[in-house]
Length: 209
Image 1: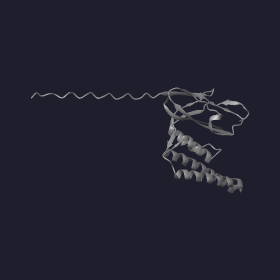
Image 2: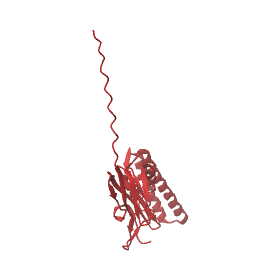
Image 3: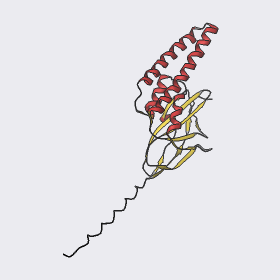
Image 4: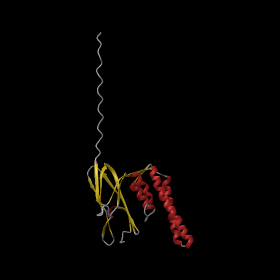
């Protein structure tokens, strides 16, 4: 009997090259239009690129932060009411308790995740006319990259990985507050996005300083 050797095992197929992730440049300007009709560029505005949703632990952190803010308001208004016996502060404290109960209900039924736009809308609705302090933990957790506007109100965010994001910025002073949360899809091209009154997620009292 003639012995025959088995054929050599075929060489393994090379691993496929990882897909090329397109990089996007996002650029634009930021300004506000006053009630007088005058426009004002916003210098030094912090522009954030955020992943589009928060997970359950971050959502809990956001809501607990907002609840703590409302509790401080309740105690502040109760203290004023007891000192000066003013019914207005008593009414404000009662309203704040209603706000707090709504946040507590949300905390008792947390979803696994929440879109950032839904979260910001809830925070602004439950405690209107105030900066939504509960949104801060979401900004920290979902930050991808950031930039600041220049002296002429322009910004540029280069090399943003492909994907769906929100652009966030907020501007506040003694008499006004504005917050933006603008959805963008990064697909490898240049995207132009302006921050202005028309696309603000929340805007209060934009008058003249």
